[in-house]
Picture (cartoon, rainbow, N blue to C red):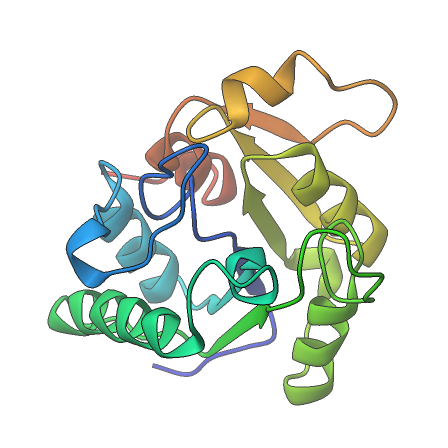
Length: 186
């Protein structure tokens, strides 16, 4: 299948996998996919979208867990998707602590621009799926359409939305996929 430049940017925790809010995913044993994620990501892949994961992982910069733990979790996640015929074209993590003034921690767009340096991206036909206001802000600032899920932090963060609004709010990952594919999900 030929890929074009339309891209789906995906947050990890609370979007693809369950987010143990107030804690970190530090082991592959802690990884739990959210309902519909495998099927939804497969549909996006087969619709010709490039798949890029963008995630803040402040636990490393804050000294809560080591980079090796993140590598193991990422390896398991990639293996699960690979078993279903899907791979991520790129994975970008901000490893800085929550209080560091970096340019890559969402809502900043440094990771998006790094991906844009690695891949040609048609921002007009691309999306970011996230569950936090910082995801909405980053996606909007980068110039892609944003779908905010009500999974993970989404239900709580939805109440805090003020000026920068997502293009769509979705209860589930599959609902977001339906929005992107124009309802062509069977």
